[in-house]
Length: 331
DNA sequence: GCCC
DNA sequence: CAGTACG
DNA sequence: GGGCCGTTACTG
Image 1 (cartoon, rainbow, N blue to C red):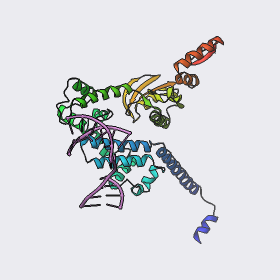
Image 2 (image 1 turned 60 degrees about the vertical axis):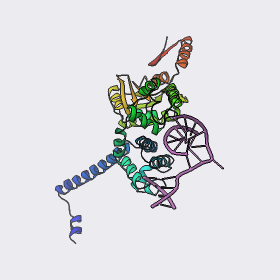
Image 3 (image 1 turned 180 degrees about the horizontal axis):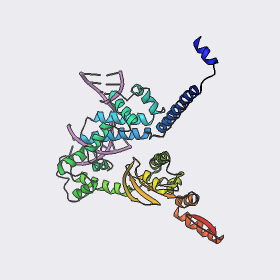
Image 4 (image 1 turned 90 degrees about the vertical axis):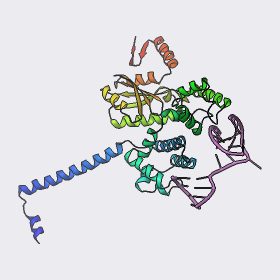
């Protein structure tokens, strides 16, 4: 046979060259695919909690719009179902098994699928854009629900809690149909109540938010290491912000990645060592970047608490050691 | 919106 | 009574 | 096509 004859022959140099080319291209192909998989793996992954939150938001927004209450409840139910799901949502989407889950039908299945595959949901973004942010915040005020908020918005053109507070003080609510003296008073008290707890966040909320942020930063590979610090690291039940500490030789790249995090709503300050942002969830987040050598000392310092630090430094001093966030040395 |  | 908010 | 939480709790 012809090909057997060929095999047994001495091959000319050109043959090996061709073969080498094939091998190289095959290796390149492998490398390319592995890289592709790694990239896909490192891509921002949608968490179940996030999906649930978006579905929940849709429910709220629909109520504010005055949609069929059962429709918004369908979204609430779907949100709860997704959140309590044991299985990996991405796998469910890829295998198109989402629609088999009780509580998720045609419409919501499509929307979740879009969200998981593209990271966005057109319907949600349009819906959110059509309603002033302040109205959603008003839902936190006890005694105020979507119907009353809708009335306040449409009749008085009020879009923020601040404006609402003034309107109450000026007795402008009692004229509205369905409102009265008691209602107005209750709303005003409700506003005070909400104010009292603004800027305070429960550990589970803040922690999941912080984990997502850390995961994102790690994915960008701009820092050698990142760590959640502050009161969150101390597992305080209530925290007022998220502190993240990173070690890197080039801090600017980390800061740049940080402010480009998809969950950032507003950048408060951006510098070489510290950057502060407000997240879309309403939680403040600080990132501090130090060198690799400083990292352990900085981690201790930024984990705190302030009281712990002063006490520890005082004790160190007595032992003849000077310590700060950058390191420690014998005096 | 979802389910029966 | 009806409408609205709540847990 | 029709139901979807409640001997709710409160306000107007």
